Image (tube, rainbow, N blue to C red; front, side, top):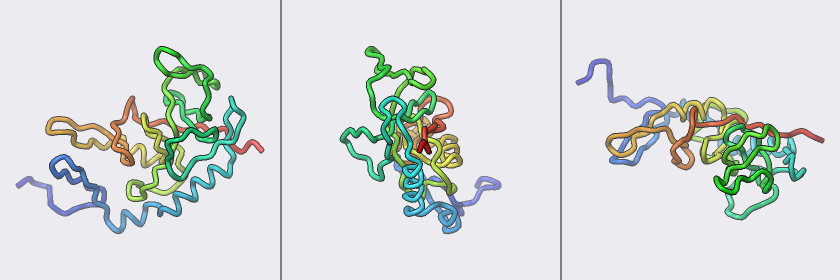
Length: 186
């Protein structure tokens, strides 16, 4: 028996079942999390701000569901600087596939931005102003910082932080990026 330890589950307890990691949430913890409708309302609010692509000069729309087809309105984030733009071929490095951000000229990878729509993974409510690196799932600041600090078991000898929405291992330090939209430009 370990002194100071108990087998009583607390909100946010991770349970490793032979490689499958489960998240246990209490009723109190879930009460602090947003509902699915709250998350959809946050998407609507961002879209109502009419974020613009500074290159294509078109309005970007964050989709409620991820679709495989390319859209001129689909937002993308530069993972080194956080600027959100539409899909375009400007500044693409042919060798690495990285792109140069037209706003700050930072070279780096680009990924689609999509909303993480599983309410149980949120630790608070609020606007989704950050995205996980490298997958682009949006969430609140407190949520991305929490998940970037949680080490999930990988095999029997390793632990690393992952995006809770897609289980992609987080890249870089700190594993997330603040999103910078060009919005409210009416």
